[in-house]
Image (cartoon, rainbow, N blue to C red):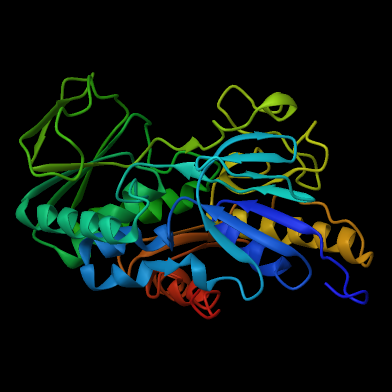
Length: 366
């Protein structure tokens, strides 16, 4: 470094998911950015169900993290302990950046999210699940939230002869802060394409068979209804990935493992450590919310580094959701109300937002 060069502040971003990749990309020009993730590729899991039923999509949804940053670096590793700004990685390496962003996301059952950190093995697992699904006549989906409904719609569009049943403990689909009009429209379309809904009674037990594998599946609800299938998928069970948090940062975790953050998305008691996405209490666990939070975090760190701009506060927006039922079906709740298949296909169902994220990976491979 010459006398005229000034060392740029260091930023470590833990997690290369929706919020982490956008934060790292946004700060790449003003800081020494290190992005840390155990996987070698970003999995665009918004389109994972599409890749399950149509394997030509598999390659599209894995994007190489070593092509994200032009100036910074990608480190394939995993945080095992974070105490303040000190990060200890599984390899034994330690990082102590000027700014730390926790964006480690959440765990969710395969194949919506992969348990394989290597993209080659993750792709093979998706292909195997596709083959298994193709060999099954009857499909059971446990969970009637957005993921379960999307999966049902994808199967019935690409494999219309399959018998698909969705079960949920709640008395209606799409549990959460949504308009009943949205639920009613989705149920209308699900009935039209032949998806059976079994709602309002918990299962006495989950199937013994592994999800995504061909097996004799038999379950019974507490109400006494028996359901049989040849394959099943679990579409519930988000778990925030915060097991590595230590010290004062751990005091910010609630009973479910989520981190409490202030309006600037700094971890409470964390001395300037930022957190965003599925691991925080700031908003609902969605890719869109993580993206909006990344903009606030990046803007606040940039303002501190450059001395320009005012600190920004994050505010959860109105309830928004887009639920495709295959490329041409589905319904959405938007700021101006509930809309049907045409708008839903245009927003998400047709492209599954692949290009929106693939454009971030424009750096030379390193």
